[in-house]
Length: 356
Image (cartoon, rainbow, N blue to C red; front, side, top):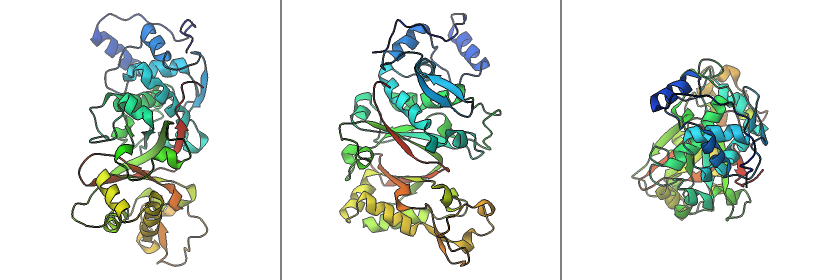
């Protein structure tokens, strides 16, 4: 267990004992995302630290873009402010560890003018234990664990990484994903093995997957009768001028495809595995060069050598390889799936442990 008797290094301030005064002070210091926060009192911070085995001063690494050292104590302060419970803290720690991996490139996706947001996807038994929703309305509000865990990461990026709007945050429009975005895979209603098992983790393990996304595209399909037709609809929705993936192939940018259970079931009954879904999307979510040329990001394209740029009819895929398409099953009843356009970064997964 955490050393609850260890000294905490955070500075203390005395504020008038009123909700308004506390919120105003936190806002004036630039510590909030604009919404009210839970006051990070010493007892609450110590209670948060009790959910993870380590010393308050233990370092998780340096967070960009501000290059600040992240300790368990500093992260616990932000988790308290976000509304987390101590049992949420291992997920928050793991999410932060994933965000700090070099291949995730937080320094890049945090400050881009595109306003990329970080999405967390939880797999394994801990999702049910903590009530992390992966069923109906899982992208939206109303679920404490989803909201608090996702917000804790975002407050850490803001308060520890220095991503303050108008300062290091130069997003043109930004995104509501920069408040909080966390959900779980709906493993019970998925016809396939879940994400963490695909990656080689034991089914009894729990993981957090983090991705940097620029948008969520809802795909409604309610009348076709085969899994192939569903996939055709999805691939068709992914073809559009200005979608970053078509211009950033050389960066190995990834996309997320979130299939609702009804679509996933229909696709599986048509004989498709998750790997088959990736291959289908890779083969069919393509655009000819003549439709991309001289538009959007074309002047700054990063294409691998195997793209024949001399032929205007060359079909450019949305990702550089089928394995760069991450397939997740989530959501409730109804025939709405979604895909998420990635930024120039890799999707990263970490196992949730209760100690460093």
